[in-house]
Length: 108
Image 1 (cartoon, rainbow, N blue to C red):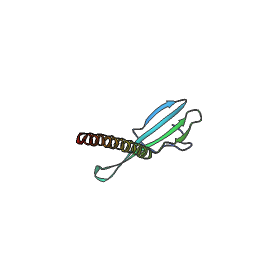
Image 2: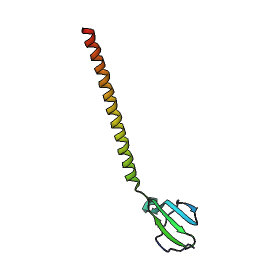
Image 3: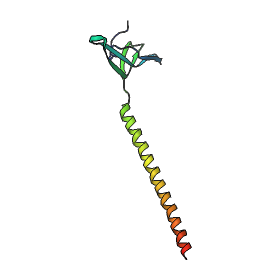
Image 4: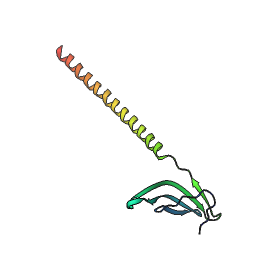
């Protein structure tokens, strides 16, 4: 039986665990609670814990907020798209100006 010293994960199943440098690293999982009528209420976890095998102690590992990362990536993509559209607009204006210059030359 593994001790419950430190900050340990809640009861769950379906978690992934690997070993790294004498630590067990646990990620995610799900806890299913059976409700009336055979219905299930599921809690999905996206947290990470480490179990130090020498000290036999749990530690919760910090992870960057995935929503914040996704929002930051979306902002970067939106900025790149806006810059690309602005560049296309400038190129289009330059193309139109060249057409205007050719028309002016033809009028002479």
